[in-house]
Image 1 (tube, one colour):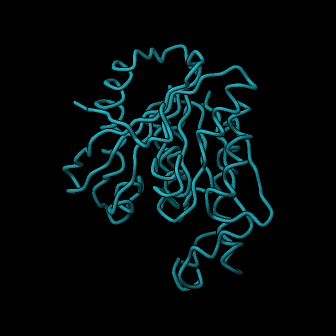
Image 2 (tube, rainbow, N blue to C red):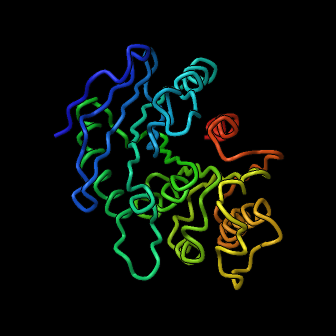
Length: 268
């Protein structure tokens, strides 16, 4: 059973659970819950990398979405109410957030998603008296969390509004291409990429990834863009409703993702 306490004194509508053990990885996650203060709930958001959502001082790399300010603004201007359930990542993120492990490795990401949806999300919704059947359902993530958001919607198609910001395609490519066949045809995928995201690679991509991938290896930035665009193109080939934002000079962090997230949320 999850028990929640105050997340931070500056946020009186955000709560954090005690650490939840992932027995498969011998590591822990926390769940955060955010509820609207003065609005009826109209949307539920399931989010990854919860530590990067609300406060800079709790974020992994000093960037954060400033999500409370963003959601409060939308609630006021659009007369909405957002209930958020988010899970933090941990030191095992590259395993727990990779739904496409190679070499037949154990799929810890799928187990994490199933644990969230089948064990923790029902309890949280019950505790907060949230009936989700008539709510707009959103699953969102960035980078590896962007891959997780797509995989989550494949496994739980009721969450049919996907926000995948700069997905870390190289963890899933080329397996994700075939997996998109299983995506609910009624879903909407909101996907983005910026032109300056290649600096996250520690070496020239031509030294890291197989050249037989049909992607642009001319430089690291073009490689990143080509991989995300390939996912976009595959979604469109499958007639999945797709919104795509291509951001000039966009970098791989929450500061650049924030206005994109706002655009996507406005469309849902």
